[in-house]
Image 1 (cartoon, rainbow, N blue to C red):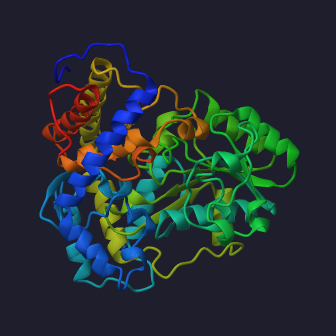
Image 2 (tube, helix red, strand yellow):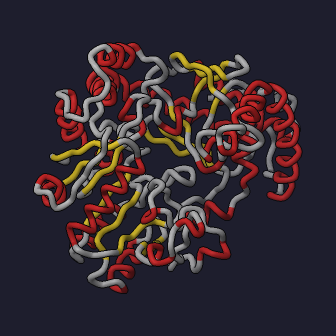
Length: 472
């Protein structure tokens, strides 16, 4: 699809692009702060009682935080009254969009019948059965976040094997518990050799060195590195936790055969495989990356989209591991596990919203976005590519992105400028630029995603000195 007038090649030198991006970012940040005045005042007021003026450090964005007021359908409205096409989706939660009638009805009905008992409710059976059908794993437990899901997975890996160490991929984020707060975004000085990454605490002194040593770090996509780790730590590795599609550094799909090879290696060494599908689960296919790539892990972690906007988490697995819960070997607990509101919402998500028609809709929007981005990149000689599966995708402003070292090597300005141009022109993307992805919902339209493409072309035209658009 052609959106505008072709811009002549060749591509400018990288340093020329970065100089221009720096100038565009300065103008775009000024425009951003000018139209988010109410949000910035709320942050200042909030700082009197909220540490840093926000509820989560991820919300402390540069140059300022956007405070949300309400949402409906595919749109979000901020504290200044500005309406955005919401492709942020609450960091990937929003496959159903805002105030979806099925979710509103399910939660409203449940509220009137009680919101918490600390006891199981029947909707939990329906939700677990639907998850078992989608992901091919027979037994499930609920918790309340992605962090809790991956924490339970790590605990089960250790309990099942009696071994202390786990393997994780450099540059992946699996939540906020100690075992996985290792080598999330290590600096080049800390990271060590590319083929043998160092284990670097992500939260400094918050994670004791004794715990850091129990997490062995490998590069993504490298079967040989996993095999080497298993040999060098023979008899000590309980298992590996991995995002089957890496989504902490843009979007990186696994090389052909990688997931199957890793699974076979782990099993040969008496270890287990856990998929972190907190971002990919339900989003890239009805059965997540497990379905998409045809490899079923021993444990699978879910959260985000499952709850339709309510806090949620789930872990599913094979009987050999999940029976360690039922026989009391591992006590998987939580006051809010299987909360009635969450179960009502999750049942509606799985049975009423994320239907076959929903995934056809995601595919239609994905095709429009991918073809449109590719057209803009080609016509304006932008570096990079676009990658997308199902409802998730990312514009990647580098020609090579296969692992964390590639991610570190390309300039942050690209992602930050793109985020600012989208936000200043009515499309809400997740912050932190090159790290994140877009999320479309069942309530987004072709017109919504075309607005995203128009804004990308605004950035491209301003970068190349064309006359199509401006930064605000």
